[in-house]
Length: 580
Image 1 (cartoon, rainbow, N blue to C red):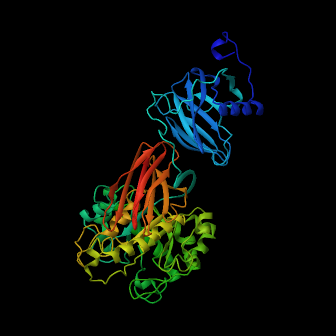
Image 2 (cartoon, one colour; image 1 turned 120 degrees about the vertical axis):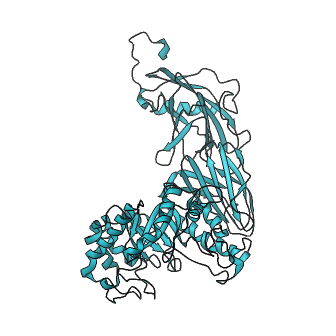
């Protein structure tokens, strides 16, 4: 008997779903027969009717109608290797060992939802409903009873009910060129940024807003790097710029890096040409770094990350100080806890030098005092270290690339830097700078920080080499394709590419209810009508493009169910933002 037929006080005996029942359901779905599931829910009887929909060669539609509750949860089990390609009129999440359990909750768009399933070589299996419940939690499978409809529907509908707010694809989905997989996740993004001048005056408030703001003509940087002078009277220099960065941007982090300790504390008695910190001054140095954090806080600036040393494996003729990996471990182990209200970073080596960071990671106390692993990109790729840092990943320490500067496309006084259409400058921007951002993200790193944000070869001009001070340069627009759209807290997710999309270098992210793909096309050919497969029905898609002739320009998109079609010009970088 169904729930509506029960006499008062009658309780239906609990029945477990058997393998035979599950097999029968799959067969009925394959035949397009309606299947009803009923259960006793708090809001009264809730039933789910499953109807087979339109079938194509490589995929098929299924519609589920829920009766008896405005708020509902349905659990669907898929048969590998089949995968759900899109869902409409419901909010779906995936679980199970290979993402083969789909839980769909009501999203206010009606009492019916549908989904498209890719066969992936298995054309006979059909999904199994394992739970149908009112409310936001699935019912236990043991309490679900089944009643099979005796007749098939007169015609299998090819779309969701007319009253639904959204509909499935009106044309057969195309073969995808890029398929986003939200079930497989990687690193959480901390941000993309640049440094204020380490020596000299800071950015103006207007310049800071251009660099960290997220509006039109702004670049969206979310990390600002600054120096810690060995002379405390110089700390005030960057206060205004750092305050403006915190006020003008969203979730902007400040990274403070010292180039040297005071000269009297060093073995060479000099700020420059390297030299080591004397061990009997370790506690003084910890106090010095802590005093800097305290001072900045008193000025209204939170210092989120403090590095122990900039490039401890380099001794140039400017401010510098040398450390070995063992010395860094000893300092962080014994003194790290004295630097409060911030997180510590080691070691900002020239080329992500593991010898500087492994000792700290391998020491439990030093490791616990460390928040981040940092390194620079000079020679890192050649050294084979532009890749995942296994030891840092093992101990869940985010890796930041905290400095890179490459500008060999033209001379230091050449006006080519001010020419947005200069081929050599654009080629360097795309093939060196943007390529290494993409590689850093693929390596699982959480941040990429360029050298100075304001310089003739950088993101905004400094008034030299023909540039206008404060005006956005081509390299800034290109960098914003990451910085402005991939925000702190976003998580990188997996994707697969077709042969057609193989020339593209792509990373995908999810956050704020959106999916973002940064697409780098360094090839000499456009990839036209590339089909992006999202995990759910797409309600909005925005594509922004920077090329030699365009600056973060909007591009046309076409939406079909859970697919978005875009064209990617040759020698370009674009960001596709998808709202499901």
